[in-house]
Length: 198
Image (cartoon, rainbow, N blue to C red; front, side, top):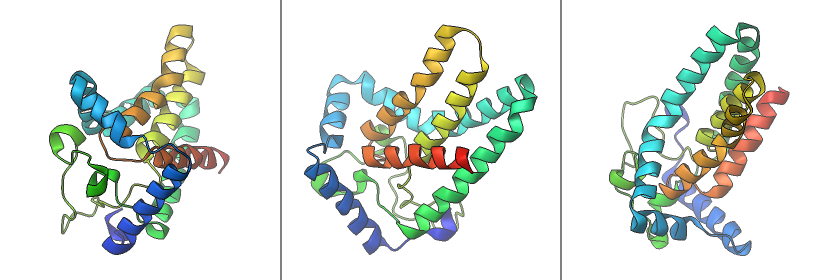
């Protein structure tokens, strides 16, 4: 991921292209969602905590649950994850994009207290750090892969419903925290679907 860190100029230009697309659709909602979350308090805390904790820890937990609970399905899910990561790295290389929190004109709070993320533009020497890896949002892509895989495997209907709805929570988390545009989440879902097909 860090090896495909794109140029800052192109990354900011691409982010502003996404702003233009959302404006044209009448759906530039990131500032208003974050304003509401920060004003209310607890929704912003859910977004901050969720961004910092749910993605990596949740993915590891889901892999373990599938491995130990449904070993026959593990290989397919693992391969989906690998395919999704290859597709996403290609996206980061071809279309490096700054997250909305880096665009001052949007007025988002870039502090880690809201974003749950490093407020850095660079982190030299870190092979996993790429501040311009916004498209696609793999927070949303992987949440779809893991939660929908589990939803198809578990039996209780209430648990199925929660698992099918989980990607909506992750979409809220990435948008309210200022780490992704909602369009990034759509590309994350497309990446998950493409990975399943692969």
